Each structure stands twice: as structure tokens, then as C-alpha cells.
Amino acid sequence: MYKKIIIVLCLFLFTGCTRTYYMNSLSYEEILNNATIEENNLHNTNNKGFKYYLPTGFSVTKDNEFNQTLTSHNNIYYLNIDIVSYYYKKGSEETKEIDDYYFYKFNKNNKDGYLRIRKNNDKFFVELCYNYAIIEVEVEENEIKYAVSRGITILNSIKYNDTVIEKKLNDKDLESKETAYKIPEPKEKNEIKNVLEYINENEE
Image (cartoon, rainbow, N blue to C red; front, side, top):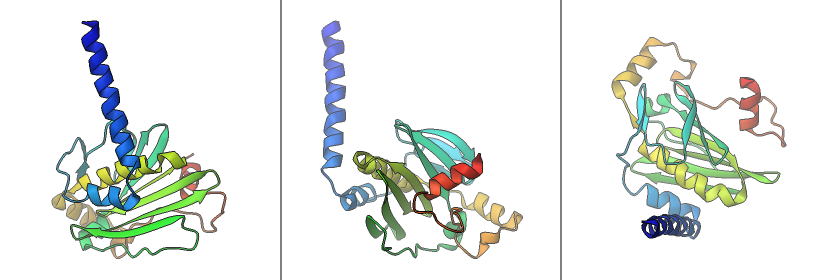
């Protein structure tokens, strides 16, 4: 009996290590391309107007309509759903900036996306946009590929409810009806402070 339990645990640990090793051996482009080869039809999290797949190890800590706060490995992920861009099918217009540590723009399944990574002291600010939604998180360098891998899994799985979104846009006088939703940021950007820290201060 004990031998069977030990064997199962060893297989579980070996599989997990193998997956981690495989993911770390891939480039950012390969992680994104592999995850978006086809649409993800798995869903375990439902919201008004959209649903998505939340990977194992993630949990929703705040649900503010089209803005979700997720946690994994003690890191906070901000998921923002841009229903305006989805409704009007507006693609991303982001380009590489001087202070980008890494920038990659891509188009899969007729949907624009980009990955931007910026170094912030000893940590890295990851901004991943795809499928009319964006995920932002600040992580250690050795956690970047995990964040990108899980982030694109979530974004690729998002399915929108056209009826709910159309009603939402028609019922409310949204200032963003003609422009894509933008995450709030300070008027004067401080090099030491990133957008996530600014959002946290506002919430407090």
C-alpha cells in the first residue's frame, strides 16, 4: 500500500518537474505560439459577459465586473477585460518602447496580442495582451515564463457573451465607447513605481 502511494507521488513530482523543465526550455515566442495554436474551449470561471479557464494554482481574490484580481505563487495578477475593443474588434496598437526589457507582438486566430516585459529594480513587470484582454503581474526573473505561460492560457480561453456585452454597452454611458479601455495610471510616472503599485494605492 505504502509502495503504491510512494510510486504515485514520485510520478506526480516527476511529471511536474518535466513540465517545468520543458516550459523553461522554450522561448517567450514559443510559449505564446504553442498556447495559441488553437482556441481553448475549457472554462471553469464564469462572469457576466465572459468566461475563462483558471489554471490550477490560481484563485480569484477580487471580482469587479470586467476587472479580476488573481493570485498564484504569492503573486498578484490583474486581469482586465476590454469589452469595448471586443465589441468594435479593435486590435492592439502597442509598439516597442525604449525602456522595454523585452517586447513581442503577435497575431493568432485573427486576434492581436503583445508581450511587454520591463525591469523594475530586482523584479520584472509582465504585461500580456491578447483576445481583447490584458494580464499584468510583477514577478521574479525565474517566474517570468510561468507568468507568461499561465497568462496566455487564461487569455486564450476567454469566451465572450455578445448579448450581455451589447446590453452592457447600450445601457451605460461609457466614456470608453469609442476608445479601448486603459488601465488607470498616474499622470506623472515615477520610475520606481509601476502601474500595479499605483492601482494598489488607489484601492487602499
